[in-house]
Amino acid sequence: MNLHPLVQPLESILGSWNGIGRGHYPTITDFDYTETITFDAIPGKPVLRYEQKTASPSGSPMHTELGFLRPVGEGRVEFIIAQPTGQTELLEGTVEEREDGTLHLRFAESRVLNSSTAKTVDSTTRTYVFNALRSSVHTEFHMSAVEQSMQEHLVSDLSKFL
Image 1 (cartoon, rainbow, N blue to C red):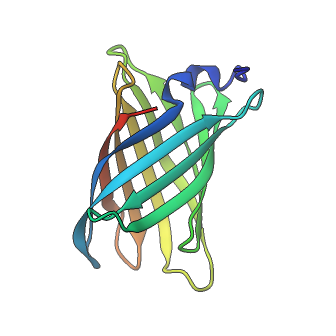
Image 2 (cartoon, rainbow, N blue to C red; image 1 turned 180 degrees about the vertical axis):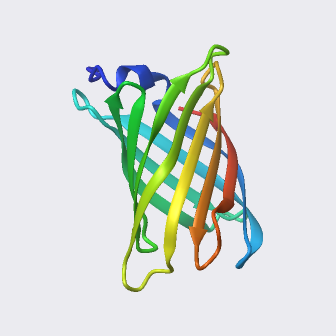
């Protein structure tokens, strides 16, 4: 595949990842879920397509989101995500391969736009830590929403299957 030079350092995360996650927040009951995330390259373009889907332990669909991961050079990356719950997220962060071989994508800056009918989400952070073999990824999602301060909402451990 003809990967854009900005995407080439992220080639190892292309594919699908699946596993188990846990969710909690002061305004809801704790829950477990299965999660699948997929990163696809767009030949020749400086962007990866992203899709996330979750399901309950019984297999019922729970959440999905779509977006684009945009490496912009010098270890910087942008993440643009749309959600069917009425939010769009624009996150800016860093990508870093550490000495131990792990790859860290950290998004600590976000701007969230809520539709007029959506629950209010003020800000979010996201972290993805891929192991050195690129066979697993640990994800964390923090948010400040519905008058709650920034705190962990979701965490998952996924394994590569495609």
